[in-house]
Amino acid sequence: MARTEQHAEGAGPFTTRLTWHLPDGGTAVWESRPARRRGTLAVRPPGSATTRHTSAGDVALRRLRRLNTIAATAFVIGGALFAVGAGMAQFGSGDATTVASVYFAGGLFFTTGGYVSLLQVVNAPRHVPGGEGRLVTHGWRWWSYEPARVDWLSTFVLFAGTLVFAVDLVDSFLQGLTVQQINRLIWAPDVIGCVLFLVSGHLGFAEICHGRLCVRRRSLGWWIVAVNQLGSALFMLSALAAFTRPSTGSLINADITNWGTLVGALCFSLGGLLQALERPAGSRTTRARSR
Image (cartoon, rainbow, N blue to C red):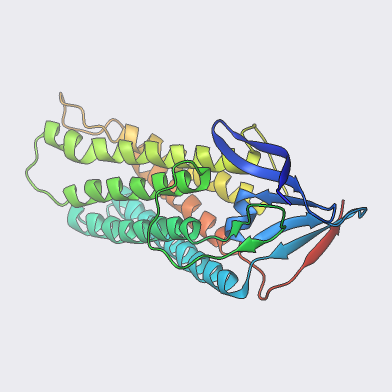
């Protein structure tokens, strides 16, 4: 029996939630974030007021747990290193090369977390086309191109942002730059990276809220996106304040630059800690809740 979609929700061209009838008369609900992060699909048997959350296979669950642990750890460490670097810059506890080295190390962890987050999407279990209410797991892939999926686009933009930040961090080791070169080689990539982080967070909200504005205080996923988006906004504020004035050769506001980076980095570390909790259950189980 072909799948009959009762309702499709999403943001613009992206579908983030699908509801359809099952051959036995029940109902299945696929949501993008729970499926890719926890490997779950909601199924309600015919005539029942209880929704069961069925899980993908054990291979998929182990894969999701492993990738989630790596990404979360990378963001925690990367954020901590950026906070340390900003603190050193603010309080003058290290020279410019030392501070740049700490930032660069943090950038490596951010890039790792960004790529592994993309791998989570690429290798997430998929819902079965047709009438079945289950998720299937495909073979391992290191890359995919799926811009029609909001989760793929969000994590790809995040990963791209970490790569742009890497340009900024490498250029920060250069010596003897003019003010124009500093703004072009260091400041501009920093701002572009911040914009990409903000776009990624916006897409993350679109995935969770299905294209609407929402506040979901009981949703761990919503809090993860919200905390990371706050960090991205603080990074943007920090980047804007780091513009070097051609007339004086000084930053617009060094205090805002350092404190914005420090607090924003701590937001990313907190987001990583919360992400470590958003993982599949320890074994393949079916959970139920009343509606």
